[in-house]
Image (tube, rainbow, N blue to C red):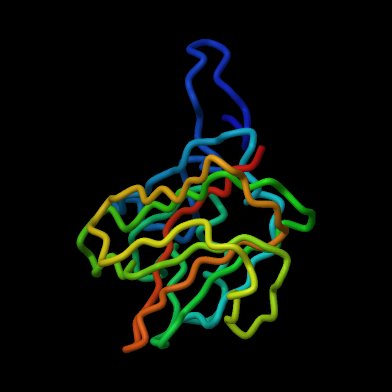
Amino acid sequence: MYSKREECQLSKALVSRHWTGMVAAVNPIQECFSSWAVSNDAIPDATIDASSTANDGREKEMPAVGYYCYDENGYVYSSALHTTPWWAADLGTVRRIYAVRILTRRKNTYPPRFQNVEVRVGNVNLGNGDFSANKLLGLYEGEAGYGEVINFNTSDPISGSVVSVQSINTQGNYLILPDIQILYM
């Protein structure tokens, strides 16, 4: 078994972050997916906040754990219906962020619900969803499909301690994040 950020010494292959193969609450016939461990991912040490949650609040941290499954408990972050739902990671220290990778739902259990999303990096985290003072890392226009890896990249890293992901669909939308990586230099 491997813990986060370890590398398989036999094959030098990337290994998963946190996934042990079993989760007590997961039905054994459910499919589970895992993200790859990278040493420069700021997520494992981050404090997570969100505009809302669709269930009981526990799932706002699910994109940061490194795996997700399909069952009635979700194992993904899902906001409630909002005009601008958001999810944010407070990194605890200023980092030079050069990429944010987000994986959308891999199966059609529910719609991916990743539409018109912007990612911002900076030092402002008001908790009210106004991240406009932070620099824009990238904008995804339109609606993502199933199993897409959405990459927000910059060749000029942005310094900040807060990374926000926000749907800017003013008609109201959900924001679903199964897995996210915040990469720094």
